[in-house]
Length: 161
Image (cartoon, rainbow, N blue to C red; front, side):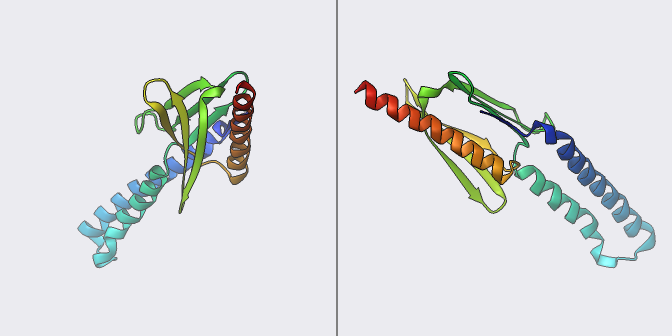
């Protein structure tokens, strides 16, 4: 199964640009209000604070683009930001039989995927992906696909014993 929200990148770019323009306009409005007009009096700081908070929430949500591919014998996970210098893109590929378990964590507007894979050196490794920008249907499809892989791994373990 393949899952990707890469087609929504223009929408994410639009919102990022819109928030940056709001911040720029807020800074200009703040400067003009403080130096010349003084219409808002002490409330002119909100012209900068509100766009900063919105931009912060947008980027705290994590990497916007998530790609998953379970076709073949390996699982591919890719997670990247639309603005390349904000965070390093994640790209992991490992055989399906190494997948031990996964967990999706929802906290307010944040959603994370934790994948536990088996490792020769340390026993297990936890990989973290940010899936806040996936729709609930896409997240459920991802959950179903990962459950299928785990179920197939358990059946192979039972047959091998």
